Amino acid sequence: LMYVGLEKQAFMDPSLQANLPSLPVNLLRSSGLAGGMVEWLLGDGTLSSKLGNDSTALIQLHPYTIAGFIGIMANALNLLPVGNTDGGRIAQAMFGRSFSKFIRGVTLILMVVAGFFGGDQANILLFFAIFAQIWQKEPEVPCKNEIDGISDERAVLAFATAFLVGLAVVPLSI
Image 1 (cartoon, helix red, strand yellow):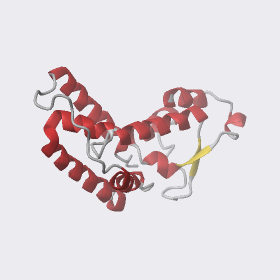
Image 2 (cartoon, rainbow, N blue to C red):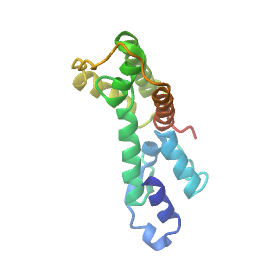
Image 3 (cartoon, rainbow, N blue to C red):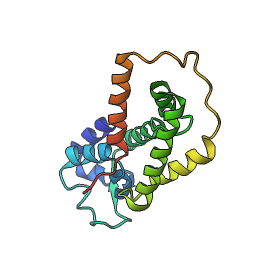
Image 4 (spheres, rainbow, N blue to C red):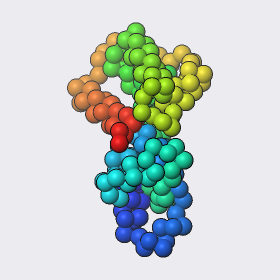
């Protein structure tokens, strides 16, 4: 969806582009995947040339692009191994209960560090870490079979998904 919106915008009449909704540039920089797509389709320097490091800089984007960005970020945050999210369930299925708790702690620490010291100027990771600590603390429902491991195909799919999540949540460095 984001690609379609960016492609529509790339070939849109400049007079129509003036009427498009805006997003803060720092919000788009908070995702390497989404920011990279914007840079690739709208031209190199699109996110870096918008008033330098000004936190109030805006970029006008097609509504499909905005919806696609929200979808990328919502799904990526849901796939982080934190709490009762899908990523937490995947980590529990792959590594068991005890090691998945360790992975959860490491992920939360990395999210807080990225929020305070990293390049995530929009603080999406920090806010999600706080949200997950408050609202995702319920104990996980036990799996039907926690003794058998997962198949190799599912493990490869889980690691590929983790790679895409990493691309989506690691901030774009410009």
